Amino acid sequence: MTAETGLKDRFVVEHLPDAGQQPQYLFDLPQLQYPARMNSAVELIDRHVHEGRGDHIALRWLQDGRQEQMSYGALARWTNRLARVLTEDLGLVSGNRLLLRGPNNLCMAGALLACLKAGIIAVPTMPLLRARELGTILKISRSQAALCDERLLDELQHCRDPDNANYYEGLKQIIAFGSQAPDDMLARADTKSDAPYDAQTRRDDPCLIAFTSGTTGKPKGCIHFHRDVLAMCDTFSGQILQTGPADIACGTPPLAFTFGLGGLLCFPLRAGGSALLVEKLTPESFLDIIQAHKVTMTFTAPTFYRKMAELAHGYRLDSLRTCVSAGEALPDATRQLWKKASGINMTDGIGGTEMMHVYISSSGNDIRDGAIGRVVPGYQARVVDAAMNEVPPGTLGRLAVRGPTGCRYLDDERQSRYVQQQWNLPGDAFVMDADGYFYYRARDDDMIVSAGYNIAGPEVESVLMTHQAVNDCGVVGRSDGERGAIVKAYVVLNVGFTPSPELVTALQNHVKQEAAPYKYPREIEFVEQLPRTETGKLQRFVLRKMTESGS
Image 1 (cartoon, one colour):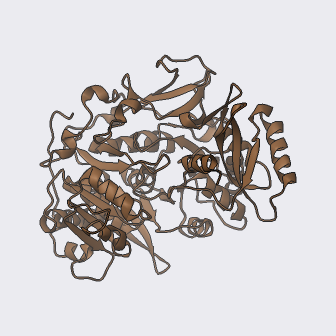
Image 2: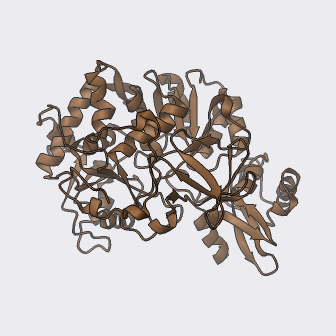
Image 3: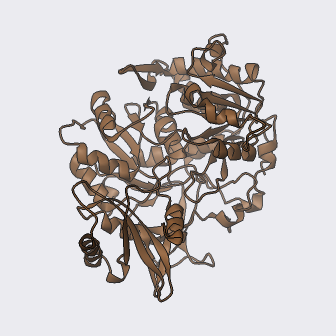
């Protein structure tokens, strides 16, 4: 539990895991030495104004096909006004929770930053969530109010209906943004003072509850502090990506997902660069935007890069300097396709909502085939056995990591499984080589034990993706009386290929030729599409249910 807080509402502080259930935190880098009294939004925005960069562009967005923009000075004044909407109109006090619902646009970014500036704890949610999911998040976070894009109000309104199964009585008010109504968030902000806002927050005050994205079903609320927001910028962004003032960042992950919050908002703002916010991207429109608006940094999932690579011929992508892949395992075939299409050797990374952002990665000349990379400066990582003993290089085991950020579930019994002996255990099976490069094998629960062999589902997926017929695939284990389990692959075919027994055999032989023969999928089922989260992650738990039910 945090010893001191500047927050008036202490609910989240009082429901943090006990100190003994939290990981050890590391602040060895000089840039991680934050002052005791500190506000992350002030550091991301107002600091640039105070240091003479107020006229630099902070946010960019598209409106009627034109690029609009807002300087750091204008963003500082606007978020001051928005913060006063939260405290004066909604009556929120520091430490209250505010659910945010919207796409990647100016209003959603402004609402997030205003929450941080006002000392309100932001609870951002994915635009595609339904009332059932929103109701669960409201009940776990005990949010008192919500800001919502006016186009997405319907599902949230169900949570205020006493006759609806997803009713949450604690949600007292909802304010829309993006409408023309006189009580819209933007209209209210126009009436407020833009004088500097000082919420008297501390570096260890909670400012964000990020909910896990649903790859395993039941969501978990992950509490992050003001210092965590800056730490993700000063480690991965500053040390690996080397984000700078000239960078323009754009991508697909929602701002409600910490991958998007970092890459598409906080990273560029911390460095004095700019974020280009786009509500919805297709592979074609993303390529258009990179070319037209000179984007230098992209953030998306491997499946999106693969689709863009297939369409990239004829586009000028010479403005790009960094392309970041995260959210799921990056097949080497996808990395090579994108490198051929763009000239950029993709930056892979593994992170997580619990850890805020990426903690193992590599870039430039440090990339090694098959490896995600090495530990990001500021973090420590090792591979351990079931008893938490570190295993020798080349040995499969569980990943353990710690650094300036770490897992703090909001009142959740799963905390004791994620944090053991002061290390975070993200649930990933890894191998580390003698040079400190980490090789992802699978989620712990994605390891398939077949006739005594350990087979990593993502490894089989990577091999299948190198076959010309395969557009997408997912691999899970199916129970088998003789072998314990067998490898089953769900495959989406490229245009021009038709499901057939002959193609099944061809794909099986392809895996046998490219990997140890025992890893080949003994069953292959062709499907139209795979179940994925809004952030692009493959939902293997859905595939496992399909396998168990035979559907």
